[in-house]
Length: 138
Image (cartoon, rainbow, N blue to C red; front, side, top):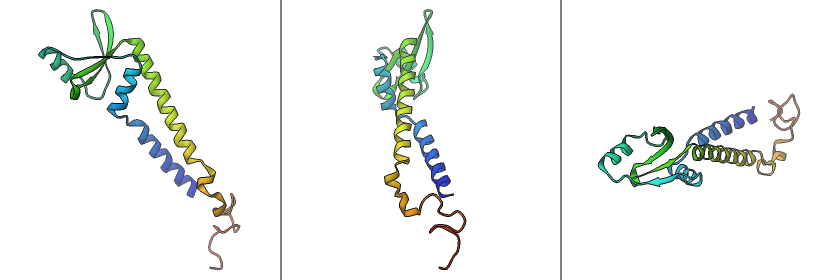
């Protein structure tokens, strides 16, 4: 029972942690994927930057080509890449998420940190064996 509660809490915390990605982290992954930064110079370009959904990579078509844009209106710039850079970005995001989950899982299952000997072994709480057994001569 105790392990299932701890497991459920760990799954919930991992799920929440992996769905959130800071803008700074996302921008680092975009740059590492080969996205270039552009700075809007005209009022029309600045307006287009402001109209893009914040915190999201948006696909656009221009002159028959596909581009992916991530706006950073706070710094008055945008990250722009093509399909190749976008695929690389998706792969880096996946690799980063898997590495983080692996680290969290490793930390969660460290036997030395859990001090299993304190719990009286694996049969604790089952039947009338071990210190975690039901009501006894207390």
